[in-house]
Length: 158
Picture (tube, rainbow, N blue to C red):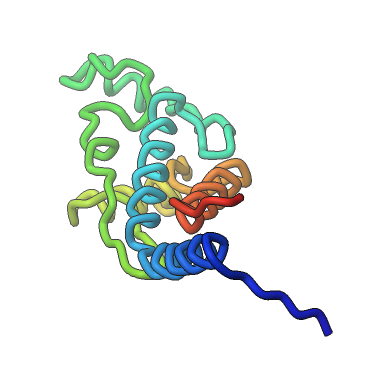
């Protein structure tokens, strides 16, 4: 059996660090607010790049869609996908934060249905999926690192 004793300044530092670890582990909403903002930022970037979170290009617009746009009031959108008004992209935000997670997506009810249709597609109306929300391995690694930094925030060694 190994015995160890800590006294003086080392004991105070160890006690302080253990208190910080316990507090930071309980204060998870702060981390999830940060993680949610990061996910929203990445979703918005999907619109700019017209790609899924993992970098696959969205399916191009059909010729009939392009023709209809050229003739109508949406001509200014040109060939840009899901960006005629920008309303879906601009509706993205953090919807809910709780102790064990965060939910992000279109924040207004009308855009939740529209967002779902574009995210997953609707084969019955020939609408292909154009994923703009999701977590990639790179994002997972980033958020895991952020969580570690959150838990160890303020803890000092030495």
